[in-house]
Image 1 (cartoon, rainbow, N blue to C red):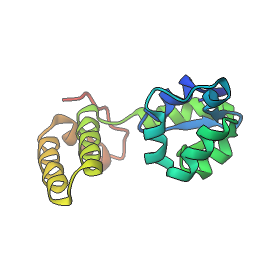
Image 2: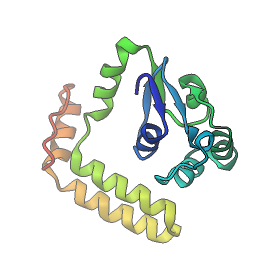
Image 3: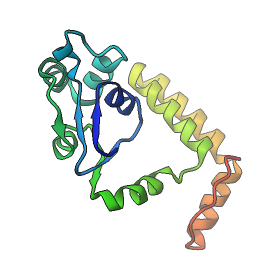
Length: 153
């Protein structure tokens, strides 16, 4: 993310699994200043990501925060100079799609269920991934010291 990420833009960002930004980015939920509140699930997502105190402050005050502050609050995983942001994003995006989908499902279940159920879900997802062509490609690329070429198969 670069520039201003306010209101609906910040709502979209909070719905993402991983968030990175340019050091010049600004984040905020100014809806309260307009007499309304964030309506896209942000009160829930923000509370789960950064905790009640941060969610209350950002939504009740409505003032934007700098990318460095958003990073400190756990809203971003990294902050980059503008000229390095695209490369940083590409590095994060190069993952095996099927395994990533299984991982996201396992993580989501882990948040909302008991440990035993979450572990069983993870075991099943691991088994599914272990039999894929992407797993073979990943292992071969590691052994050959090259970048893997994942296909989602």
